[in-house]
Every structure is written in C-alpha cells, then in structure tokens.
Length: 240
Ligand code: SF4
Image 1 (cartoon, protein in one colour):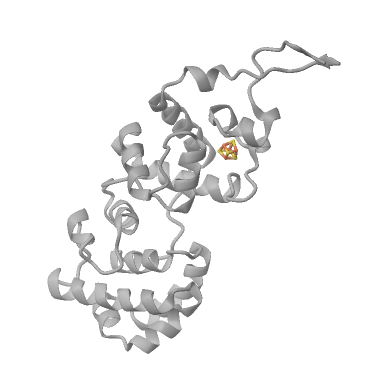
Image 2: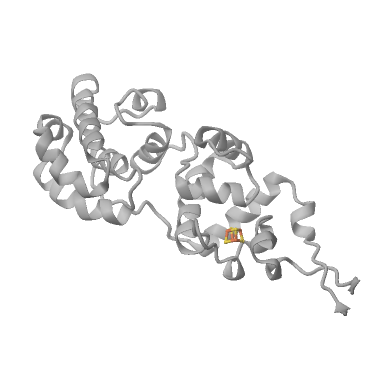
C-alpha cells in the first residue's frame, strides 16, 4: 500500500508537433553547438563518394578508408577510370563493397561525361547518379553547397524521429516529408546532423539512455522505456 506517483506530462500533451519539433531543435542546438558532417573530404566529389560508402557503415570506418582512396584517386576523372578491382579492394571494409565500388565508378563517370567533372547542384540531377538516393543527395547539397534541399534521414534520424513522436512512418521518404512540414527549411540539415549526434551518444538503437536524455520531457517514448523519466506534474492515487 502506498502512494503511487501518477505521471502526467503536460509538455507532451499541450504542444503541437511543430512546437515540439521547435523545442527539440533549440535543445539540440544547445547540446551540440558545433555539430557538423563527420565524414572526411575536401571536395564535393569526395563528399559524394564518402557518403555512398557510409551506407550501412559508420562514418568512422569510412574515414579510415577514404584517405588512401582519395590519395590514389582524388577526383571524378581518376575515380571513373580506376580499375574496378582496385576500387573494390580499397573500399572492401565498408561492406557491400562490390556494389559501392560499381556505383562510385559509374557515378563519377557520369559526373565527368554529363556534368563537366563537377558534382551537380540540384536534387533532380543528383538523383540521376548511380547509387545516389535522397539521403546522399541531401548530405551533398547541404554540406558541399550549403543548400537545404530536404531533410537527411539516415538510420539515426529515422529512429529518433519516430521515438520523438514526430512521424508514424518507417519509410525514409515519408519521414522526410513529415519532417519538412514540421521544421523551417533553414534548419533541415541542422536537425539531421544534431539528431545523428544524439542518436550516437544517447538515443542508441538498442539501449536508449532515457534517464540521461536532455530531450526526455519532450519525448513520448521516454515514459515507455524509462517511466521515472516522465515529468512529474501530478502526484496522487493510492494503490492497494
Ligand atoms: S528520451 Fe529516450 S527515446 Fe526519447 S530521445 Fe531521449 S533517449 Fe531517445
């Protein structure tokens, strides 16, 4: 017998999704003020290649592979002309290496042939490149050219946007559409990059650390995973 704490989180209930997204964004900017793309690159072509390699792989692993790759094949022309076996060997440890090497070669060949050796600057043109879907195109547009064409939805942004209750979808394209409606365009990449940091540091796939999470009072998943994390606004109710 004893008093049971009934947790009612007024924050979660009263905010519209847009307000909630705004509050989360403010918090994320405070938490990760210097967040930036963690891939190592020095040209748009290299960023494109590094982003292709980052599919199903950590940025850390990609950054171990790209120094030698870019030393041997620094630009679109040399990458497009590289022997496929050599490319495969160089990118092998990033996984799915045959496909990645094939896409890198074909994409850089197209860049040389159709775009004068320069990475195109529109979403439509980027999506024509082999191996480039919206996630890669968004990263390149944002970090190589400073253009927020969409919201980058990687595995972290996908998971956290669902946990934060900002989308009910699991499909990246639909999640991106939901997020684009909730966030100001100027912050689309700010959102993604910081959510990625938070996903790596706190809201991990298997064991989200809700008890230490600075977004817990804004997150509808927190009380489900860690009930003591909900805001305590009402204390009542006796249990027997
Ligand atoms: S409260 Fe938990 S589920 Fe929500 S964002 Fe934080 S770690 Fe993730």
